[in-house]
Image (cartoon, rainbow, N blue to C red; front, top):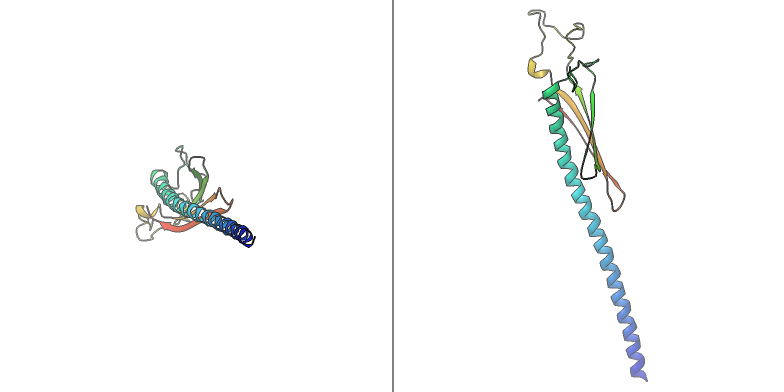
Length: 159
């Protein structure tokens, strides 16, 4: 009799031990999956952030601050330009970038546009006219945890 009872108790302990190990393995696998997903998203956000910086530089090199995409003169050439772009298969990576000119691009308003009194011309060189402060912000929601991951960058660009 004692032998059968010992076997039953040993079997119950073994089942509890296996179930505990299974639960721990499941938790570890979920934690590892969250970490891997967050690392992947962080790398993607960084790559898209660099791509957005390049797009902003290309935009200013092509249009400058004076004209828009249609070739029309902007109403306020000293105002910031806001652009939105989405990346990813389902446009899940959302980015906004804002390009603010560092110098006054309004040649018609000479009170705001610095003029060198000796030459009568602008004190800025042509390559300085597209200098800007570039603010970029991007976000994506982790599909597993529904946590929103964000990235921001502010830098001075002289294309």
